[in-house]
Length: 319
Image (cartoon, rainbow, N blue to C red; front, side, top):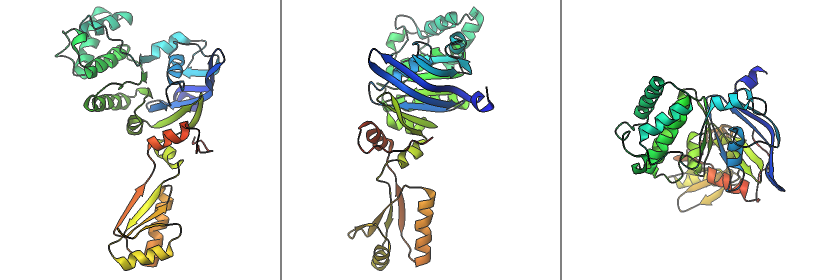
């Protein structure tokens, strides 16, 4: 195994999965560096949960070279299971027992001694701000508390790779932001997070790299900023307070959209540093001063709709 492959927490090449004639995953490639957040986006039915189930050993792939935590998924699934934790779309919390009992149950499943299990449970309950509720039945917890307990249970075995399948579905904004902070802290501690989500803001906020899955294939992948630059509609907006400066700029610049009422010009741009420098250099050379310059780029919603609607899809995939 090469040095580059050792740095990958998850590596998948040519991952295939079909149910009957339905191709769910059609030869996808994924590379997730250790200690990062990787987000897999896609519409319902795109194959996100299937990818998670395969990489977490819950479902067998039809084909593909798959490695998780440096272990071959086909020949050494037990080592993969020892390296990972999984939090699915639906909570694994048992509502009939207390939060502490849920934690101790997980400790038993990981074959920890009673002393080790109680220590791990106490530390994680404190870390996730659940000490006060630890003795209460989990059925009485709020949605956010159940989700925190769910992840705390996942961490009992000290996994270095965690699969989070839509972890904030159904949570209110405050609970969602709390969950984001938890994920950031996990990654700071060296944990790799494989995240699927329906909240595009969540991927934008957390992910180091993002892949968009559509019809069983990776439509594009890259950083959030790289994906946004694939979609047309980005522009630089110049606003002036001096009408003469506005007229000079409007008559000299090419391909601009004028807004005579607000004295603003809109220039098509990919929002890159090079494009911005070009505009600033031109303004300096022409001796024209804009009072306000703003860069507008498409957001992940624009990217998602463009890549999954079948229309206006970019030809190039960012790698």
